Length: 280
Ligand code: DHB
Ligand code: FE
Image 1: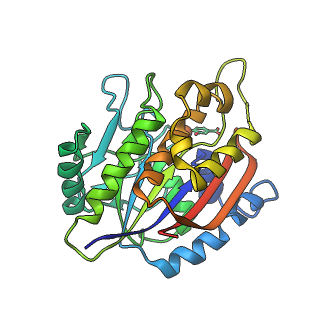
Image 2: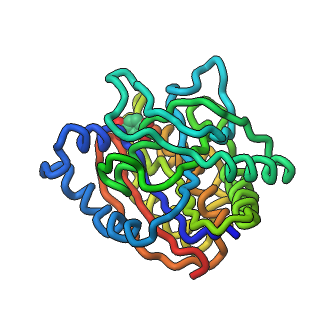
């Protein structure tokens, strides 16, 4: 059977992708950000996951105001990097795992979560920057990736509680897949940031660190945080953090904290990163 071996969470700032792509990662501004992922790159090279189930948000790249799925699962064979206005990032095409993705889709929909099935979409910095942070700059991504897009861009976003419950259904689905696969689940986006309006630039280190503590040790309490608290405390784009609860819901209650990193700022964003070994 498939095993969920670990959960990974990480922020996804587009400027991090640009710093890598333009060879600026050793510059003094960026070096401390990338250092936070040195352990992670070594760790994942040894873990060699077969599949990453990657929870992320699209930023009006594949979707637009024409069509806004709350939860969309990528069931296709491949997903190309999106052109976000400056040409596509020079990163490999993402290869999916249609068989596992369809299995998860069937299981989760029959558990009463209404997913949108996507066979064709381009993936933006929300998905490619976490891959770059964890795997560096390979010619091909070393594992299959199932993209799972969550609407946190157009109001109303799903609640943290809904995301946490969905994570539990996804975990159950993965564990019932009849192939011996090493699967990781990643929750991405966040941490506190606001890109617009009079509060642009908002960062809340106290909220972020409390969220990390709760996510690790008391995820039920983290799941009870109302969506307005994210917006008020972590900024309008801080709501991206609900995606981390999908990751946490798919893991067991007990986890082993392998790595925790927090850095302020990267571009407009507080960067947070966790690696949780499933089962503790
Ligand atoms: C920034 C952060 C984001 O999450 C995003 O999607 C776009 C920009 C930023 O920090 O600039
Ligand atoms: Fe974002």
